[in-house]
Length: 336
Image (cartoon, rainbow, N blue to C red):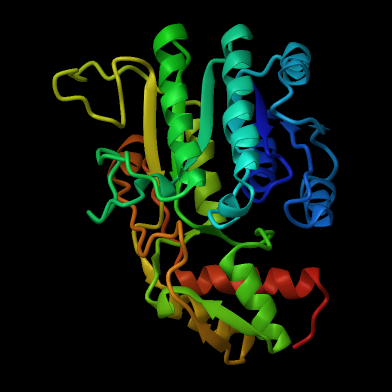
């Protein structure tokens, strides 16, 4: 079985590519290696983490003709779309990047899946789709019609687009709502990376919502394990689905949405303390208000994920942070 991963040089994509290759799958990737964050980090993931053994096509997903050429050449059985313009706050500064990557790019993927007989499409959604919802824990049966950022709106749009293609063309599509993924090789724009760097250097960290944020931090290995189990479990029609009382997480079409979260939200200050414990230094903190587009709390209900693949994330925050800090110190050759 051949699997095409978009966003192969990304945080989740590189980890997933290595795992799937080790499980015996043929893996190829698409990643345009854009400069949203350090391109060298992306190159190192490809060259070191993947041992230069997985081919990556350096093209933009929004360029449909080039994406189609890859599908024609590689003929993937399964597509895992992880490529996206990420970041809630950056969507306030550069909204058009999100339309190009998350909407136009996903459209290219859907059309190629349609025309090249792809048997299973798995794609990254986000916990941000829950938006103004304050019913905890977030369930895939909840309404997600009130996004708080353009990033969230593009991810909700991906779910709607996927359903349309499942309905029209019978393509099995599975959307994965990731909850604050962290771990070694993580993105420099995310809290763990920024906090660790600042604490190590003795700089001040910005603590939003005065430290009262709650996040369902999910370790990258748990995310990758869940995805790998879904590779050979394409979405199927829900025969009990009823249009009079439509459940949003499944359909009469081969369409499914899952949460992938730790099912255990952690207060932001506890997260900071875990870094302080590992580094052995106290952070200098600048307490700030909740930022536009942010939500105060995320909390994943993963009952259906556990039911369907017999797995749920369980890595505790201190263990996960310890692994990240060890990687960070080694990667940047830092001695404490």
